[in-house]
Amino acid sequence: MNSGSPLTRKVSLSKEKVYVVDSSAFIEGYPPHLIEEKQYVPAAIEEELRDQRSRSLLDAAVRSGDVIVMVPSDRGVKLAEEVAEKTGEAKVLSKVDKHVVALAFDLAAEGYEPVIVTDDYALQNVACKAGFTFKSLMRDGIRNVVKWKLYCSSCRRSYPPDYPDETCEVCGGQLKRVRYRRGKVHGVSH
Ligand SMILES: [Zn+2]
Image 1 (cartoon, rainbow, N blue to C red):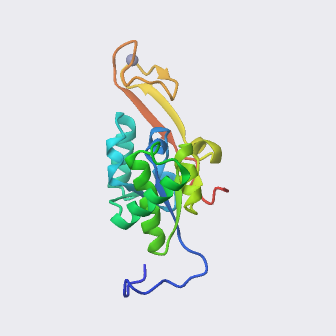
Image 2 (cartoon, rainbow, N blue to C red):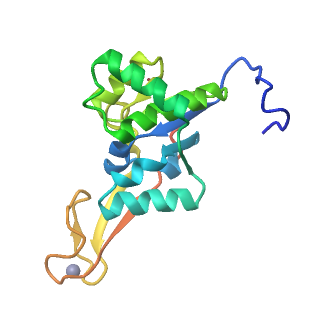
């Protein structure tokens, strides 16, 4: 990174892409460790990650430095609310959704090119109206890059990757999830 006055505008032909990730993406199995771009989430995201798996996914990603947690500026939140009002999505969007858009405004102001990662149509619509690109886990195949294997740590019985419980139905053992890496996701076409 260039050090220098924060007031100096970075002059470059192509802006650095950064991802702003919505809670729906984490719930759907978004793989932070497979993404090359810097990734941001609003601090409020923790309110919406209630299941243990998506929470520990986020915690691990924050600890490893793959994901940066940020609180959006008041200016960003105001801009996000204005766009949400214009699109008629203001009542549909959650606080986290608005903060995702707000972070995108903040990061754009810092000279980045934010890409919003979400499967939520209302949020995609607002992202679009705000002039940001977005990626959908399902449509852009981000999720498909990760292969999951779920098995019981006691009896080794295997389970489908989307099995909703955390314990083995046969022996009550703790289920373990193993991820397979298949290379970095980079430049997924929009
Ligand atoms: Zn078992």
